[in-house]
Every structure is written in C-alpha cells, then in structure tokens.
Image (cartoon, rainbow, N blue to C red):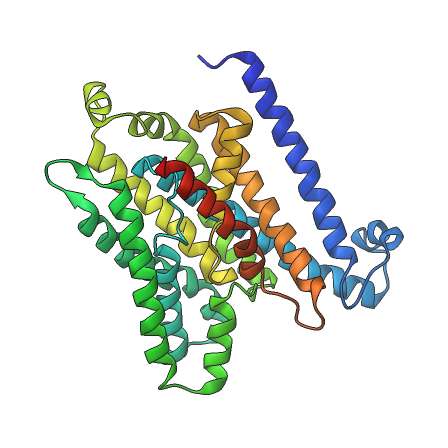
Length: 337
C-alpha cells in the first residue's frame, strides 16, 4: 500500500507540472519571429483575434507545441519502461540506438519510397516502428545470455555501438541521393521539430492514448521486473514474456515520437530520474510524473531553441543534448562507483 502522504505529494507535483506546461506553452505561443502580445492571446484563443494573430497561434505555434508536448511524453514513458525492464538507469531510446533505428527506417522510406503527401504523415510512425523494432530485436539478441538473462550494461554498450553504426550507414545513404532530400533528413536527425502541423498530432496521439493506460496497468509488473530475477520468478512473473511485451510498447512510443520530431535523445533518460527523485521509485507514482516532465522539458527546449538564434533557431534535439549529455556523464560516473 502506498502511503497517502506520498500520493498527495505526487498529485501536487502533477498539478505543478501541469501549470508549468501551461505557462511554457503560453510563453511559446506569444514569442517568436511573428510575436503575438500576451494581452491578445486570450481573445485570439476564443476566436476574437485578427487573421494574422489566429494564423500564428492556431496554424503555426499551437500545433508545434502540442506535437512537442506529446513527443516528449512518449519519449519519457519509453525511457521509463526501458529502465524498468533492463534494470539499468542509463537506458534511453536515444542512447541505446532505438531512435537511430527508427531514424534510418524513416530516412530510407523518405528517400527511396515516395508516397502521397496525405498518407506520408500516418505511415511515418509505422515505418519508424519497423526500423526501431529491428534494432530492438538485435539489441535484445546480442545482450541476452542464456545463463544470466538480459545483460543491462551490455545492452547500453551495444546500443551505443548500433547508434554509431547507423550514423555511418546514413552517411553512405546520403552520398547517393538528391542533396535537397539529404538536407531535410540531416535537419530531422538533429531533432529539428518538423512535424509541426495538426495531422502530425493525429499521427502520434493514438499511440499515447493506448500505451499510457497500458503501461500504468502493467506498473506492478514493472516493479517486479526491477527486482532480482529470482524474486520476480518466485511471485509468478513470466520475465521474458513481460520484457518482450513492454519492450514493444517502449519501441512503439519512441518510434511515434521520433517520426514527428526527429532524433531526440536524453528526454527518456532525464525525465524518469527526476520523477523518481521527486516521488520515489514506485512505477505507479513516478511514471505519470515522468510523462509530464518529458513533455515539459521538450516544449521548454524547443521554445528556447527556436527563439535563441534568428531565423531558424537551434534544433530542440541539440538543446536537449546540451543538458542531457552532462547529465548522462554524471549518471555514468555515479553508477561506476
């Protein structure tokens, strides 16, 4: 049983994060190359703005903020699942190569299989999932030992190796295609939020609607998987089956996010850690907090990045990496002690 004081703390934390997300979104809608004064935001949101104000808010800023929020949530949840099933605090879909696998799938699809523009948006998450799934299967295969099961440290090391290999493969692919297409994919790989229109929201939203409740339903199983394998087996958990099912969920979430935001790492690493520090390690408690944190971190990174340098700004993926890379090194040194 979870102590009522901790539950109350979790609810207050979620409320605070919700207010933080709203505040960041309001600031993000107001500032930019075509700014909308804050005293005009409320009238504009209720349909009383000028054509320019409504265009900037509803066609440019709001869909981008919503896409970024949903993608950050998906990446944070994916990281939470991966850390749970591997018992490795360094697991993140960007660090262990899943994002790279999804990225190379999307790159090949975009460069060599042109499809109708209307279908392209909805096929991207599927293609990204296929690429990420192949990567996850290879990671699992090379990290698994028949005697000792999944090797968490080996998983991270092999994942980093896969990321490097995919980077090399991407360079080879780039050398044989149209430079304009290469420019788009290069920006995409840097985490440049490109899916900033309403159709991209409908492309990622169903994955979250299904997989957030599914993961919370499986939270107790994640708690057990986080213990030693003898304990999990002793209480009747089918370890490999649960790991595979939850790994599929983590891969689907990461693929859906990457398909609309590009290559963004470290959100899935930072959000679960901060959430655990705030409300404790129980999955029922920290996963909702991690989801909200992930969404807010990516919205914040994108808002700062796109307003830092004119006219194109700094990609959100680079802004997150500037914070996430030192944090990753800190965790690596901490775990090495």
